[in-house]
Length: 170
Image (cartoon, rainbow, N blue to C red):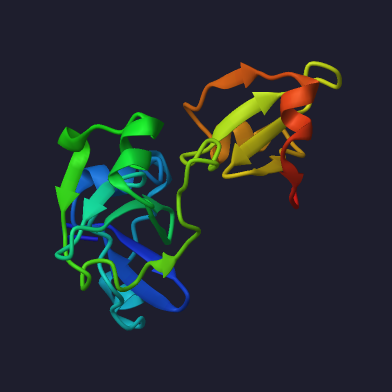
């Protein structure tokens, strides 16, 4: 109340969003809860959230990471970067320090299907899976399509395609 800024309370810390795009790529602004400053002061300050979700960040050594939620996923090579369809104009310059709060995720390779994730409908059952990097995760309730995956398009898959992925937890 009475102050600018939005913070994410996560793992017992308050993490400031440093840009509107970093906030809106992860959460709906309609879900912001306004609190008294004394509530925020009870949490220690954590690392800022600087980059939008799914940013491509290049660090000092030339490595490029795809940021997905709280993970930084290294891209194996420039060849893979281009093959997936990423564009060099999408790259944001950053530092290893900027990314220190991100856990290192799986390397994106030529076999990483849907590295940014995709909702796929099973034509046989009508069920929807979130498919990312070789795994399929069943969506067990439609509410998640509007809360977690709002604005994401569901594509029609095939049974053969969905059978290629390892089934993960809902």
